[in-house]
Image 1 (cartoon, helix red, strand yellow):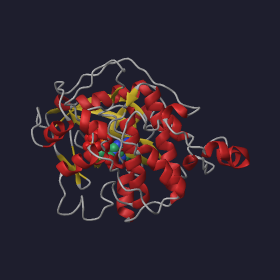
Image 2 (cartoon, helix red, strand yellow):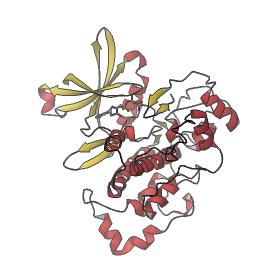
Image 3 (cartoon, rainbow, N blue to C red):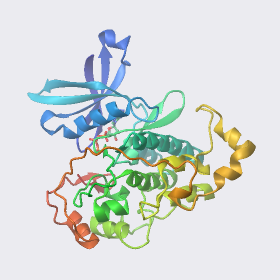
Image 4 (tube, rainbow, N blue to C red):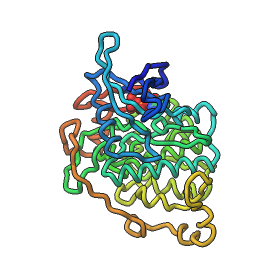
Length: 359
Ligand SMILES: Nc1ncnc2c1ncn2[C@@H]1O[C@H](COP(=O)(O)OP(=O)(O)OP(=O)(O)O)[C@@H](O)[C@H]1O
């Protein structure tokens, strides 16, 4: 494919994202005239290559950003690795909410959440965990109506099999979205994506990141990673659920914020939650109508645990994960301190949306 790099449209900890125009035969065959090119120096392109691998494996899904391939260029004397992605003209969902200065109306929260959950179902069924779900990684597309897709698979990993020992010192993702088992045991599996989904719904609905709803607590004088990790990892506290959400919305989020990962709802279970039953007509099937005409009672029944649900599917997949740091068995207290102050390998702490990313 021939392409020309245009303006920069995004920055991440691993890469720079540019708009690009395609030319030649590509415009009439495989590639759209505008694409996004995600680039990093070849020497530090492991995350981008991982993203390419995962996107290839996942194949086409209408809830996951599409990848058109990869290529290398030499720019300013440096060899650059480029990933070609479909271009999201609406940018990311976090910016959209930040710019509007408030949360989204609930019908939009429901619609976007439904897409994210469908995307997670696809990812988890294929044996992967995303490991960095947050609104910055949810892109907005406008094809006559707004819809969203999950992006940024740089930290995605194979789901661990039940026999595999957890990498106790592994860290990935963004602290504000981390689940208790990530903080306490370095366990980054599909339930952790569901916890991050709950944080994303809170943010969509309130306009504020989860944990920051308690004004002046996390964002004020006590703004530090240690206290956040302790809150996430210990006790019964979960992020506050926005009052503006409907009862169905509150129930949905509460199913994501179950501290015990084994008891947390799966993406497949959440797909049938009444909060997601509204169909705005852009999806096939008119599920809203059919629900209203007969299935409402059945769909509203909340299973009491993950094994109590008719649509529950167990996902077991082969292991192919290289743990980033050596495995250690440590107590939660030691681990939390370690995450914050004494990393075995010093992480890249980069500021993102008033908080830090841990790599
Ligand atoms: N396909 C795309 N279309 C439009 N904008 C995009 C696209 N991909 C990424 N962006 C923009 O670039 C930003 C950074 O991209 P991305 O999160 O994928 O990079 P990253 O290096 O993996 O970042 P991080 O891991 O720190 O979140 C996104 O938040 C989004 O605003």
